[in-house]
Image (cartoon, rainbow, N blue to C red):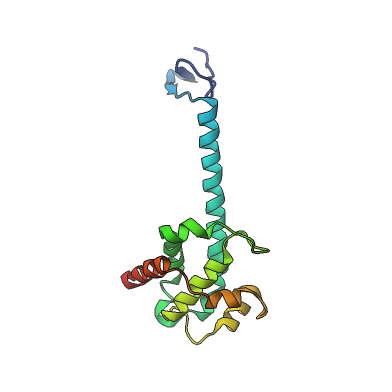
Length: 167
């Protein structure tokens, strides 16, 4: 039997793929066809999801710079805390929009505000915004220092509080 290739993006009736693997083994499968616009939409969604995964990893690397400032009672859970924070719908809706902040791929001001909220809840101890700015950016003269002092919205504050209460 011959292999028949299917055009996955064509329209019309479904294509059947028959593959001869040799030694009497064959595979038969139906390839689902989609329109070009549906294909492009799915492709775009996959690209956007991949970008969010990349940005999420960048955020996690960023906040892990604060590991030395984490309170002892949070040290064993800190690496699990931030991924959970990034899944909070209110945070997720804003965190990947970098806005007008220079030199960043994500909403660094929101990350700073959440860091400030976590400091209030004693996730970070024996520290201040200056030490945190130095840990995050290598200098105290960075806008992240001011962002740490900016309160988050009530919705985000309540959602983070619920998350912390579960820990």
